Length: 581
Image (cartoon, rainbow, N blue to C red; front, side, top):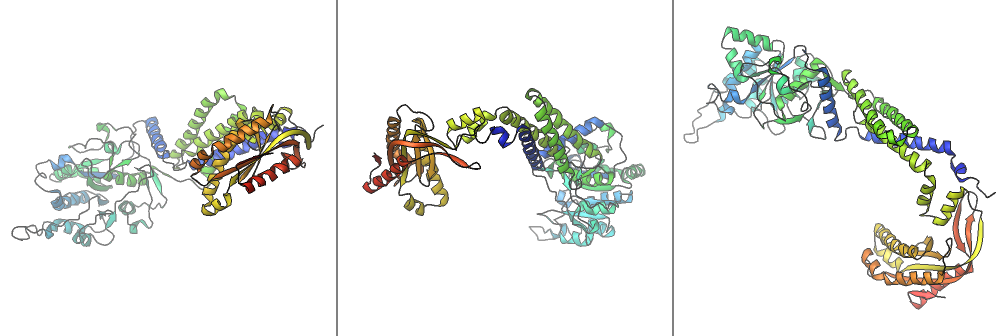
């Protein structure tokens, strides 16, 4: 009976090996799954879940929307009333429309416009006359009269003129800047409590509607905002206020709602929003004025997004981050399930299982949306598929092919013939060995110490590895065995542990080829002074395992080896590249 017993039994045993594979697969699946949280592609998955959710629900009659939009669209600008007026001089129009909306019962107004220009500052370039003085007076009076109900916008690069900021009062000027996820799509809003003091226009209007939430949330739209958001063009409002019937219609439209004024012109203030894959609402099912809506575009107007952040929070169409531990628990659950299926089921059905498992994980994320939870939809599917793949690979590559894996992995450290023998017999060889005639070679990099003093550590490693790799390839090609690396030298053996018919001839041929490729080594390492020294000696040596039961090494030893080392020293003294006994 050889020492060590059965190799597999001594190392793990089949059951312990399966358990080890399972543990590694679970850990890997969980780690990879959690790394998918907020990955750049996860946002796309989230938007597709919104699409699936909307298609499953179909077009439904929803409760009255808490927010409406009044748009400065192309129809309004082309109208007889507004066409002659430059956009920067429309403050009297906004005052007229805004007061009509408030008188009709709107809770509060938000202007998604930066009123950076004041007509009072205009001077005729020819005469210097202040010809537009007083044009902004109606808007200033409107802002002052409705302080606390009207908010105006500022952005990162634009702020309202000081006369408008002063008229609107403290806290009326708020930011409309939105933050996108790492894929460039806008999805979430983070309230900054207390909302009434927040710098955000969305928060200010939420506070006016009585919202008190503080958690960051993702808005869950149910349709394209350009077709579903209650909408009036600016021209609609101006026409409605001119008659009693129109005023009543306007009252029914805006009463009790937050109203946002904003631009709806193509390519102005447009963003990618999470509604881009959602279905459109038929015109007869959406609240719209007589002048209709602007055409639907790929990008979503900024005023629609601001309105949806407010409407979703007030309507409960939001999803927040779940409590700590929920997402990791899902990752663990699906990783464990993937490992079990990967170890139990045949490989041929695993692609189908991967699809079903990923669909189930996405289904849980979809259900989470109904409960207001954003369950990181990329985590569970990735954890399941990753663990499934790791478990299946472990089963195939380790459990079913452990002999080949043993040879392949440990062959870089031990003689391949020794590894094959252990894999085939599942036994460790006895300590000691036998005596046979071998050829021993010492191959040294000349001047390595001086060279290493001039190079960075990384460059030293690169030079050594490049040289050893090229030299090792020649040794192996001539049936030699690399016994060990000794600093900047290689000890190689011929006729152990493998059998070589003419070891002396093979060793000499290898040595000559190594010397001949010196120029190649200098080129690949970039070290022109690099040189080599090779010493060869033939004779009997003890070949086998040395060490103990806990740690051992295959090597050759004896006088032949010692003499080869001394010959290498002689070659150094004589300054020759190749010395042979």
